[in-house]
Image (cartoon, helix red, strand yellow):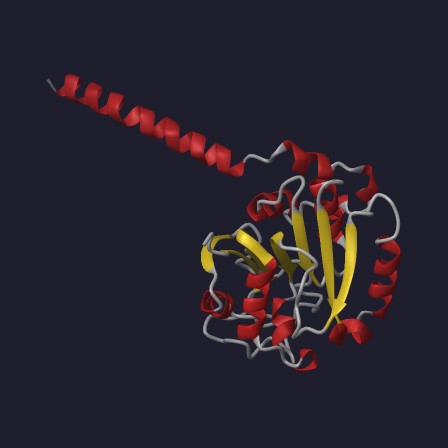
Length: 257
């Protein structure tokens, strides 16, 4: 009787185990278009950073697809822009936003950017220069993305921006069901925004609170960029931690209705 009971339990549990395994595999699988974008010869100089930046996992989490419209806030060197450009392809569009308040701190990057968006293969990339307090896009987008710059909107040189208004502006540029993905350097739990200007870090809970208050639904997080060895007390540019900071990644979704 015991053997029969065990056999019945195994028979009942096995399909669920298979389903769970399949779901996990599906969740972590990398679509072919992301792999192709990462292998694009035009970004060969970026490839050395792919493992450190967990590019494949980040792109899967961001749910970006061919033909979509992406709005990237503060694109920096263009690492993520080049990937988005290759993924969305000629039928898609990538809008990159440089807040005017950042121009004096990023003159070289901005000059390089103005050249990049004029040349193949990045003709599907546009440069938008606008005040931090007035985010807008030429058309509704599927994804708004920012990496390591959300905390800057709390800094004095950015106004600081009204994050309540900012969140509503992000919500407004997204299509119904679209997502806002935020990656940033983690600060100590409970520290709020006190480290934003000095250490360039922010408490993840602040981001979650601000964006859900703006009308977003929290849609998930990933610990793929987590580094438990980061003491969270050093400036992100410090040689002891630069490039290895503990980072959080959150996804917020605009309600479909």
